[in-house]
Length: 237
Image (cartoon, rainbow, N blue to C red; front, top):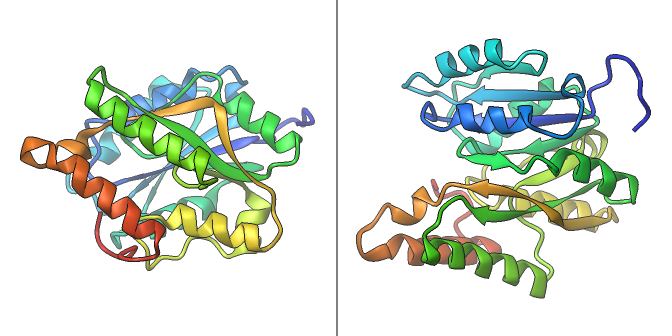
């Protein structure tokens, strides 16, 4: 990207509802990018939290200067709504939507810009499990294999701000697979969409462990499968 003073290359948008235990790590992973920090920004959308999420964000913002960290509030719960709220105040040429319990590889910002330059203004990012548990890692690796084999573009979406606005943002009815639906919409508009595998986002497998006997793996897989088929995208995740 052309080096213009004051330009923000990437806005990382983090929807956060009761994420005081995780959001600081997500923000620190942005500060570790191999990219000039003054050309990045983090936008945390406090989505009706009842814990100390906002206080943690403000504290970390003081620690991580010169990284620009913006805290905005969205009182109506909803992942898609929170993401749209963050995008509305973003200044970056590219938007990356990062879950609050996830961290970016240090190379991700530079890889996003490289993919944008090679003609992919939108796409999804490879996701790995942030754990040493073999079953959790196998589950995420299997999901990635499915994305590759079936050319599915989903999870951890990035998009140029121009195309995001042109496509009409996230559908706020959806609580799951909202990124998949937006990428499909972009593809129908003729936008080249990729699945970025040269870097990664590591995410917590905590949702896989919500039920005993590792039933969370089964439930999560079924939710994702149904969402891919267009069923239950409005169900609370």
